[in-house]
Each structure stands twice: as C-alpha cells, then as structure tokens.
Amino acid sequence: GWGTDIQEEGEIVRNRVCVAEVWNELYNGDSKNIHPAKAAEIRQVLSHLYGWEKYKLSRGRLKFGPGYGLQTAFTRCE
Image (cartoon, rainbow, N blue to C red):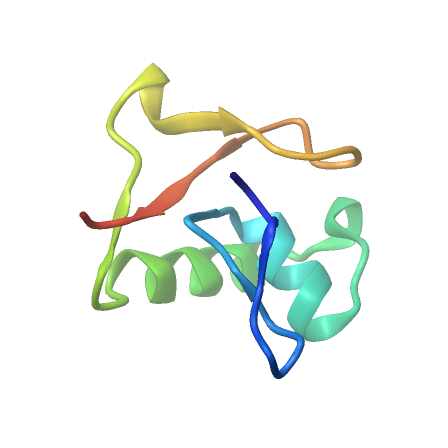
C-alpha cells in the first residue's frame, strides 16, 4: 500500500505520487501555494521519469492522503 514500505535509510517507497506531494516533500511547501509554473515543472519531470508513467484510469487521477484529495497521479511501471 501507499507509504507502508519503509527502507532502512528511512525513505518511503512509493508506488504512486502527485505534484503536491513532491512539492511538500522536497520544498516543504504548502501545496495550496504552489506557483503554476513550478507545478508544471514538477509535472514535466514526473512525466519523463524512468520507471514512472501518468496514471491512465479515472481520468488520470487518484485520491491521495489528507490535505491532497483527488490529484493527477503518476505510478510506477510494472
């Protein structure tokens, strides 16, 4: 499940991610205050990240944890 696998170094192995999570985790920013250009930049990186793809079902969106809600999602390729 999401966020349940914790590596020895303390990193969480994720099988899905959204722009808001990246913004919050990397920049300690509130996703409600993300600048559209920065969101587009993160989305561009995620869309070209090897081993990841844009989620194809449900119009490309998944529900994320508290504070995130329904977001465009990127998932690990199987």
